[in-house]
Image (cartoon, rainbow, N blue to C red; front, side, top):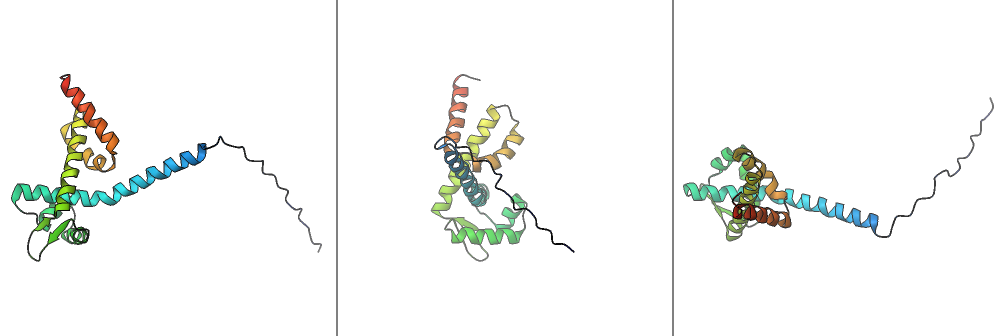
Length: 166
């Protein structure tokens, strides 16, 4: 049997085209920044939802119980207990055995900020012609991911629309 020698491969790759200075690194940096912002929003989304709901429950009923939070969020009691424990470690809530869940000052500030963002997004969606039910549902996701710049634009749009009577 004869050995067969395979020919060596020649470098057939074409030379790379040069890009204008700063074009690709700028685009990559913008893309990375956008993804980082989204990850930060996802990370804070759960805490914001919980403290906002805890504040609502305290305002409406005088207390926030794990069972009520679980019912409103559609999660298990165990999920609420684990999440509340993480919120306590973060300094947002205080819990005591067999007692309600209480917001710390930092938790109250976060709840107020989350509520404000939610209300602005709802007003904007309503101004755009979205039904109240859908606006409330959509705002639950949008409020966590909209930038401060975009939120301010939503506010300006709603204010301008209101001042013109539209």
